[in-house]
Image (tube, rainbow, N blue to C red; front, side, top):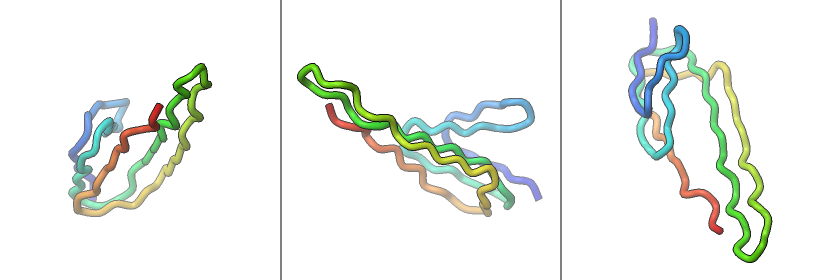
Length: 82
């Protein structure tokens, strides 16, 4: 059975759909199977008095994350403070 999904900004890349979240929301799934997941952390804020920039965030990739019918919460944080 295939997967139908909603949520985020959806674009078509080849024969795959990309759901991009830049703010918190819901990834809704109908069906079951696997999806590719890429999570990129924004990192820390920079210094206020001639300080350097903040460090980069982490990156997590899963090429076969199992999903089934339901809603998946996507939470986007506010990022690092200056």
